[in-house]
Image 1: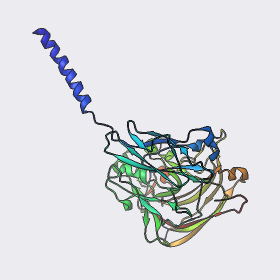
Image 2 (image 1 turned 60 degrees about the vertical axis):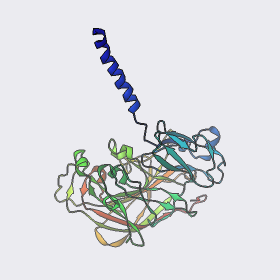
Image 3 (image 1 turned 45 degrees about the vertical axis):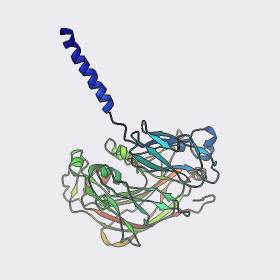
Image 4 (image 1 turned 90 degrees about the vertical axis):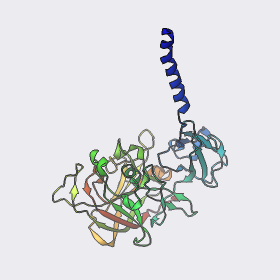
Length: 386
């Protein structure tokens, strides 16, 4: 009898463990984490071997590879994928696909089979239109907190979509619940200078943001990419500024309206007496390879100070106005290496922000900057084909 009493707890533990194993839910995640082109024979189609690999950020649904020319791509190009554990993907990783006819859609299915997510994989030549009217706007997928926001993109001459504009909206989505686009720092408006435009507003990040000494989020818009995974740990690294170009920028023009918020506060939400918020409009042209030949991007902590910068352009002052007002800025700086320019070894970013010191989480809630009809002028050079 005593032996039986000793064995009963052990039997109960075994049954409990078996129950836990049986009840464990299958993985519901269905994400592509990384995509890459593998093989020495394919390096010739890229200006840089680093461009053969794409880390995929949370929230991205389009994976873009920049190539020398889409015309010369092979008809059968294998793409390798790293996906969520135990998920499946169709077409399968490593299966040769024809990317010369446009995007190829990959569908990832979760382990439990209940969730699916689609990704468009695009191989495209680095392309930068020189006029931005901000008429092309889409709405993001709903976040886990049921919020959604506007995303800005451009179409090339063939109607292909290019997600070259980014905002801090994905980061703000972490602090809000059930919000619609107009509650986010950056959103589309119907009454721009011509057609649609962009509104950027400095908003509160709520109790969570205040607790983390990130009490405000300035509305922003920039050429580049927003990496949402960096928001909480290294927020200044979340903004990855710039896209490749092969022509030298000379001038940028556009139209704006601006009104500063009533009370300027620091990162502790303490009012700074006598200080008025200011908007920021500038552009940076920089080398996108470091001394070791690795890919390089500017971030929030060095966008105006990095030694990689070749030229900058800035609107010195953005006076408040409730009327659409023209602005103009010219690039100044170092000479440009023509060979590097031809090989897309320079990046360009254009940056707009409703609070100049928003990256330091200082500004005035309510500051609002409107932007529309931005035009970029390039220097006439031989070989420029963008």
